[in-house]
Structures are given as structure tokens and as C-alpha cells.
Length: 162
Image (cartoon, rainbow, N blue to C red; front, top):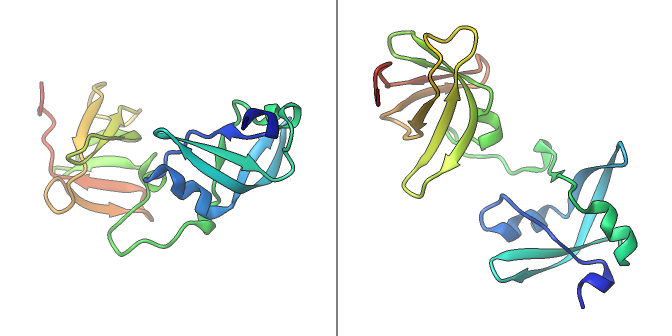
């Protein structure tokens, strides 16, 4: 029923998944062009989410969105309290320990349940070629996040988990 009216499954990385719909307008790349699309209705279906996008009312037009990555402009996201960060703000930051040793850059983050984990991949300035998984525990493991300097200082030894 939903498919014939242009509804699509949307894989959302918000928590909870339906929070993506609160933004209404999303950005998408369609046929090589950036375009703003508007979610005008949505439903939870099992653990997933199905959405209807304004102007994509039949399967043929809705199909053009299949496999497309959609995102929210950073400026549309709510401000966070001091000391809290969105994952996308941490990705790409250089990770340095208390001794000044460079471990690499944050390639991605993982949600483990207990705490988030930085996946730190080596780069040209790294002390070695090891990938490190560093728990994001503010105040103990994470000493400081400096977005201006693009650096995360950590209390983490170079030989942990060897």
C-alpha cells in the first residue's frame, strides 16, 4: 500500500530514528544536483521508518530517491550544551595523548551501549600504523576537545591493548 503512494524506507541515524523527521527539510543529491526535499509524513514500521517526500507521490518518482543519502544542514541542528558535540564534529579531528603522541584522526564513532568509541586511524603524523578504539568518556579518557585546533586530547597510552 505505501509503495504505490510513493512512500519509502528511510534509514535514519538519529536517536530515536524518527527525530530525522523533525527537521522536515533534508538535503539530497539527485541526478548530480543538490536539492532540498521535504518529509511531509512518516510512520514507524517495526524498528524502521517509512516516509513520504513532498512531490514524490508515485513509485516512479519516489524510486529516484532509492539509494540516495540525505542529510540535515548543520545550521538546522539544535545547539548543544557546552562540552557536548555531534559525531560529525569529532570526525576528522586529530587525536593526541597527554604525552603529545599523535595517534591519528577520528575516522568514525561507534555506539556500544556503555559509551561511544572513537575509531582512530593512523595518518602521516601518527606514532605508528595502528588503528585504535578509544572510549569517549569525558573527564577521564577524553581530556579536551578543541574544535578550533581540530584536536582531541586523551588520557590514553600508546601501548594500550597491544
